[in-house]
Image (cartoon, rainbow, N blue to C red):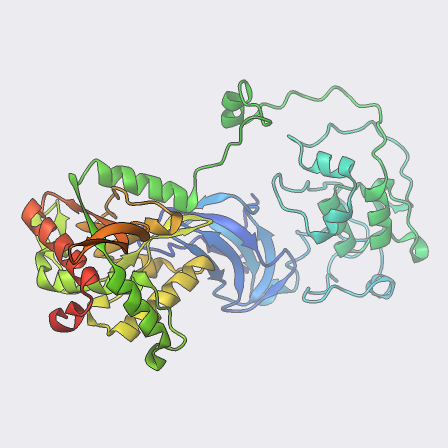
Length: 480
């Protein structure tokens, strides 16, 4: 990473986009060196331990350097992008992209500048340095790289750069020691792994065009005499795994982001809070009928109405009747903190892993309001747009394992909470109803709680109240 000493260059550091986060993974860059950025413009998307977040740049300028490629995990406080601001913005692209040996008029006449990029006018002419920066390992090629041949792709995705070839006479005309090409064309050649010295130019005055680079990328690689390459030591993780790792039989997935945070939180919770889980099987036939009735109600038009909505409301009613269940354990102060509000967490399985956003002040919401909040929460989670703030401050959680056809489970508490309710699959089963065996809609509920602050009596009362409401949903009116 280049050290910036120019006072007109601003270093944008990885911020703490959530409470107490220490690192984040760069998922996608939206800008490249040479791009102009404005205050508030999103420059990249990062994944923290809690969510995917877009980062805006806080000043105007021209991107000078991206310090890390996509897929890199960066510590909070580390500079990730350098931006030239003020008077330095005009010359920002000079150290980033190599100059061409031509006049600006000739270069612009050969090919229009790409949309959204600043014209690179400073430094045209013969450079006194022959230093050529290699593409960063792991950097993602643009869409144009899809046109490259399999041989070129294999070289780009290999374990390291090939050894330098023996000197040979370049096929392209050069001025001094550099082929003639516009900066965007040089950038394209770098992305495709093409050496401009081997490209035959077709442009005016011997200038290499984009088409020339694509043509060179599509040609099969020709082996050339090479000096014996120096041994490149693999990364420690690769060294340890390569001896016994067969890619045809196993797949290794790095543990990071949401999955890493979830694993750490679950281990901490399981070995800190003494868990107790109780179960109850309940007839929810009347609840299912009420769900169908609400779907036809104009007041719920456009809202998410399903069994989870009534189960959430039933839990809120049970908490109102047994407020001590809504608490947390303060180890440092050796106190039980009883919450007078309910931030109801809903566990959601996403491609990024399990997340638990919560509905703020769910206890104060009417059933239609709760339906609206629940629908918004689920949609946002599926789109991967849940913010870190939405996953902080939960007090009690519901996890609906029934959507996977599972009868029930023994859920682990979300850290900092005292209870979590697991909802099993709702199935048609034989059930004794009014003295006769009849097919009824039945489910099993499981309530896990922290036995340090919730004893068996309190936990049993809460679970029994939830079951009673679901069996007789009219109690929502009298108990709420």
